[in-house]
Image 1 (cartoon, rainbow, N blue to C red):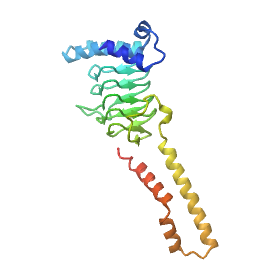
Image 2 (image 1 turned 90 degrees about the vertical axis):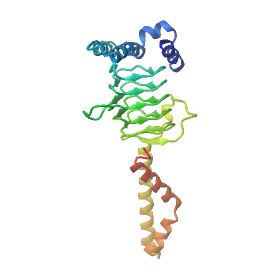
Image 3 (image 1 turned 60 degrees about the horizontal axis):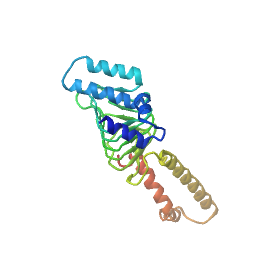
Image 4 (image 1 turned 180 degrees about the vertical axis):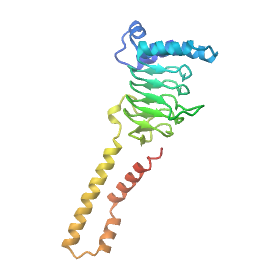
Length: 241
């Protein structure tokens, strides 16, 4: 599993130059090594020691992973400072997690209370994934997003709260964060354009002989208005999440 983790780092980080540098200078890898030992002890119900190992790991790496969390193979925690992974969290194989990410709970309930991430998931810097929710395979979560609901596979999620902005990630580069849509900006732009359109229609109404009924028919036939209606409704409804 360590060899798989090392190989994943070389595949995903162009700054990785040799195995010695990665082994001793990558806190994400070191945190995973500590965690795998702590998790094994946790599973065989050794008291205190797993949590103490986790505490030492947090002190040395800045990454806090509860010994109870289940971490798959090939997971890469890039930089990692401030990452928090809760007790019942599950992280699938080959996930990519950036600094400041929280996989946390939303209350004091017992049982499964942390998220489950599928394989090949990318969680951007500062993102918060909270509660017992399911994140599908090959999902990209934009930096700073707050995800509170289940997310289907092969989608991109951004915003607060997180909303699906793309329905197919199969051909996308996981590191192309600059290509993530800004849904809030698009909806604000659509509303702005709608206000301008309405102002123009009222000006025409004042200056022409069109009746309000005829003007309403004209607005109904406007395809741009229909498209913006759909986008705004999707945004307000959570875009399917």
